Length: 280
Image (tube, rainbow, N blue to C red; front, side, top):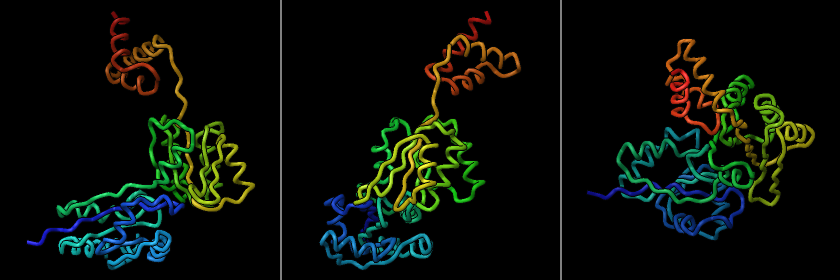
C-alpha cells in the first residue's frame, strides 16, 4: 500500500523576503504540489528567494477551496508532498487553508507546519500593550451594525485585542472603536509591518481616529487595542454585593462567581467564604 504524503502549511514573509525561513526555501524546492493563494505572488517570492519549484503549482484561494480541497487529498493519498502557502503569513489564520487541514485530519492524513512570520504576533509585539492575554479578532466586520455589535461585546474584555482592517476602512473602524470602547482606550495602528514604509502609531482611540480622518491610510493594517481597565475593589464591598445578590434570590455560589468575574484581585471562593462568614 502506498504511504500517504504530507500536507505542509508554510508561513511566508509578511513583507520582507529576508524573513523567509530555511525550511520554507527547501519546501518550495522539494514539494510535489504547491497550492498557492496567488500564483503570481508565489512566483515573485520564489524569484526573491532564488529557488525554483520543481513541483506542480495550482491556485488555492477562498473562491475555489471547496472545489480543490479534494484534489489536495487525492495528491496526499498518492504519496505526494503538498505545500500550502498564502500571500503572507501563516495559512489558515484569516487566509485559506482551514478546509484543507480539516479534510486531511478527518481523512487521517498527516499535516505539518513550517512556522514563520505572523502579522498578528508582530503587531502585538511592537504595540507595547499587555501581551499576557490577547485574542485575534480577525477582520473588522464591514457592516456598521455588525461592527458596533462586536465592539459592544468586547468593550469589557480585559485582554488585548488584535484586528485586521483594510486601509480604506481603517478610519471608520477606529471611529467605531472610539465610540464602542471609549475615546481614552489605548491602541496602536501598525501599518506595512516589516516593509519599507512600516509605520507604528500609538495613542488613544480618539487620537488615532482623528489622525486617520485627516491622513490617508495605505498598505496592510493591523489595529491593537488595550483591554478594558480593571479596578482593584474593596473585598468588603464585593462581599456586600454577593450578599445583596443572594438576598435577591441568586445562589450564593453563582453570585460569588459573577462578582469575581467583574473584579480584579479577588477570587470567587474568597467572596463566598466572606459572605458565609458575614451572614453568620
